[in-house]
Image (cartoon, rainbow, N blue to C red; front, side):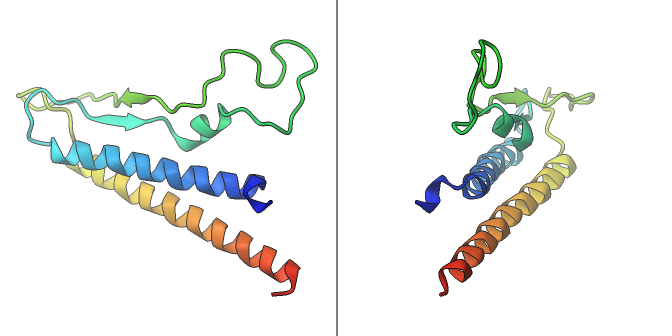
Length: 127
């Protein structure tokens, strides 16, 4: 019953996105010395969540809300890099640490939203 609440789906999506991005950041850091390795990142959460179909909206004509051409899969994209090392590696350790910090903040935010929502649900049930 409560698994269909939009706020819980949003929190779950943000937590999953944070986990996926943390994995990409860790892979970039692990390959910081690999010759020819290009740094990667995934699409921001706002873009990937906005592409998901929403079941509660109704389309009245073709191409209206959630028509064809919408994809729910976040694509892995290359990070545009102005500089690369002489061996062709484009990983910036400072940039990856900033991304890791942003990702941790997003994950903490998802957990806080989830915890707050559960607290509101428990209070409304009288527990």
